[in-house]
Length: 100
Image (cartoon, helix red, strand yellow):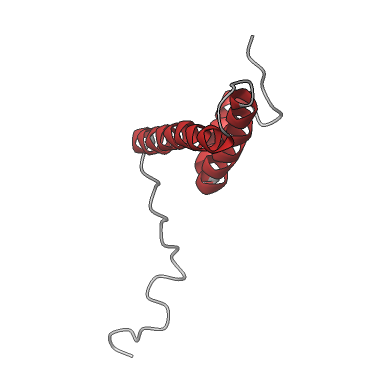
C-alpha cells in the first residue's frame, strides 16, 4: 500500500526530501531520541549511573555516525542540481555594449 500526498509524491519521498533538507536537525533529533531511549533501556540494568550514561552515549554516538554516513550516501546518489538558466534580460545587465 502506497500513500500519496496531494502533490502526488509518496510519504517516503516526502520524508526523504525533508531529511535531506534538514540534515542537522534530523541528526540531532536522532541523537536526542536515541539518548533518551537508550537511557530508559539502561535503567533496567543494575549498574552504576555513570556506566549507564557512558554506554548510552556510546550507543547514541554509533547511531549518529551511522545516520551521517547514510545522509552522505543518500546525498551522493541524488542527481546534481540543474544550473539556473540566465534570462535574456539579465544576462550582461549593467555592462556596456560594444558600439555604445
